[in-house]
View 1 (cartoon, rainbow, N blue to C red):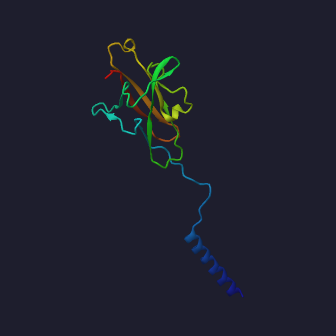
View 2: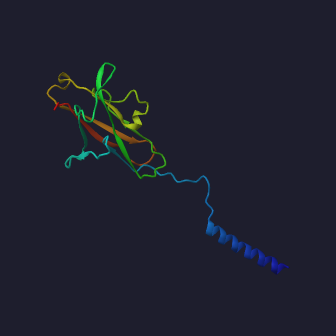
View 3: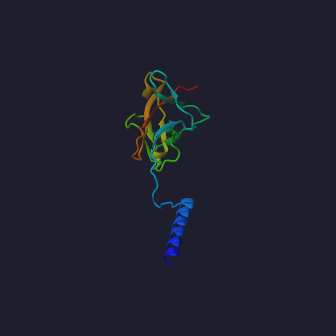
Length: 169
């Protein structure tokens, strides 16, 4: 009886190891956190910005008066066009896709859309119509826009210069 019981326990133990090894025991509730490794700001149409080879400055350029792409809208007595930036996040399977756009306050031309409560995460911008008096001798303005990850990972913020040309065609 002792031998039979020991053989039974041994066979049962080996069988248990084989079953667990084959099927596996997946622990519940343990998921690895995958952080954002890089952010890349893209244009409204998903195009990469142009990069100056000497300064490495990324630039998205647009024409305010391009009526095929933009329609002016009035907001609080001023005229604007709406523009949205896109973001490419790598890797694609990050746990938390949290990021935030930052537009310098007081630049007078570009601001996050105050009507959009998610403007900081959507990159929703309003670009103001500039009169010749506002521009002086310039025909364009440049504003540096940043996008910073908010997931606690190692990724650095990405910056792009938004260049708005005000020369009518």
